[in-house]
Length: 310
Image 1 (cartoon, one colour):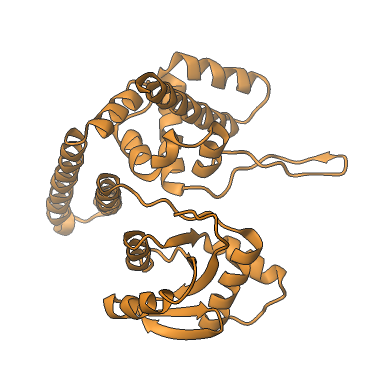
Image 2 (image 1 turned 90 degrees about the horizontal axis):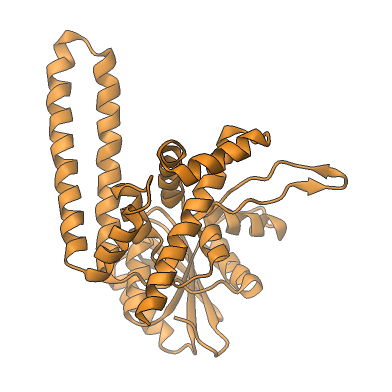
C-alpha cells in the first residue's frame, strides 16, 4: 500500500522464532507468531503511516507480510544480498539482530523501497501449489538419479517411490488446473500464454503465480523484475560482457527452459537465435535474449487483451 504521506520506517529482522524490531526511539524482540504480531501491531497503532521493512528469509517472513497486507500496512520485502551490500558500504562489520533491524531502516531511508503488492488469494494459492510441485519434482529427480546407480536390493523400493511421487505431482497439477478453471481471468491468461509455441503449462503457471504484475507494469519493468535485463560491465575503453542477475529466480528458470524449446520449435525464436549466433553470440547468451523476447511478447499479448476489454 502506497501513501503520499512521509512513511515511518519500521525495521524488522526476521528469524524462525523471533522478530527483532526497530521503531522510532525504541527496539524490541518479539516472537514470530500470532502473539508477537499482536504486540507489534499494537505498537504500530501509535505510529503515523508505518512502513514495515524486512528481508526475504525463505518463508519465515510469510506470517508477518500477510498480516501487514490484511491490516493495510505497507510492507517491503527486500533482497538480503542488496541489504548486505548496503551495510558493507556503510562500513558496518558487526552483525547482530538489533544492528540488522536498524540497518533495514537506514536502507529504507536511503533507497525508498516500493511497498509489495499483495497477491490476490487465487494467485497466492497457485504459488503455494507450485512451490509444492517444485519440491516433489526435486525429490523425483533425486530418486531417478538413485535408480540409475542402485543395486538390485534397493531398485524396487526406489521404483515404488518414483511412482508415488509421479502420482502426487499429477494430483498437484490437477489442483492447479482446477483453480485456474474456477477463475476466468486466470483461465484467459493461461490460454493466452500457452498459445505461444515454447510456453508450456508449467511456464504459464509460473508467470501467473510469481509474475502477477505483468499486466500492470511497463515492458522494461517486467523484464527487470524477471531478472532477464542485461547489465553493462564497461570501464574506460574496455567493453565487458553484459550479464543478468537478480530478479525472480523461479520465473527466470522456467523462461530458460521455455526458450530452449522455442529455439527449436518456434519459427520466430529459432530465426532470432540463429541471427544472434551468426553475429558471434554464444548459445547461452542467445537463449537469454530469447527469454527476454518471449517475456516481452507475453507482456504485449496481455496488454493488448486488457486494452481491448477497456
